[in-house]
Length: 425
Figure (cartoon, rainbow, N blue to C red):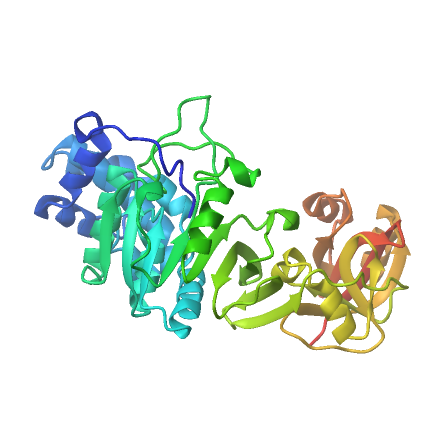
């Protein structure tokens, strides 16, 4: 989960109406309103607000409606059972770690005997919750007072208050020596409009700007977070999936995690039980994990065979495509494209496989004629190394018919190419 800033002082509660609004939500009247709004339709929000303001203060109604919207958005990450008991800030929902990913990280810690963790830059507490549910006691630290209050409320709401201590403090001033492990999640978003950065937290409801790609511009910087990690017996440092591999030190095991095929995050692991210098790709929900020393030798390149394999994004990010090429006795279709081809079928959780029926030079006209001839009405478009937009291509094909096909827009030996086929299995 990202934070706006991990070290900058925040405003007092008297200057922060968001904290007053949050406190009102935790009163019996506020909790009653939230329960009533659990299944409300956002399309009817104006009528709902008008009705509720007849019997409740307008400020409380506005806060409850805002929180109800956040809870509905949070269901995708936390599940309905937790989301409708928790509290959120706008940034907290947007930047929160998906529960499945946080649970995976916590299980790795717990499997190594970790019983206490200092969660630095804890945000609204999603990671602390996952750690506590793995039986680990947590010190959760965030600089922003509202964010810390939200994290504390979430621990209490989920019955985890005895395992999670929330502290509002500057993470750079925390003594982590008493803890078995450290977890650090630096801020990776910049301020908007040139305004001064706000306090750390996935939140506080404050707007944030675009993502920061320079690891030393994280807050706190990657160098500080790495130093904090190296002081601990074990540590995990969450980073952006697109971090340059050269920014990863040799002391870390680097893991990229995907969930349902989408890459969610990267983690640097330090200490006993991890593999320094190794790169790992983990796929959720299956938990399948692929690891190899880095860097691997460049894979061979050759002509398109009968089968094409699309590696999971975590495998690509971890630069482990060469490992899969060797496993399936295949080759790349182009040295710059992460499509693997082979002459034999290959089954693996790390790839989606396709049987290729046609290989054609790129041509909209030829593709349209082929799809019309085969009565293709459902077309899946995948692309790597092509500027063509899938929706524009579908529009121009004017599809009609009972059959389905998959087209890959890519490069083969440097030439723009269309590969047509269908999924294996």
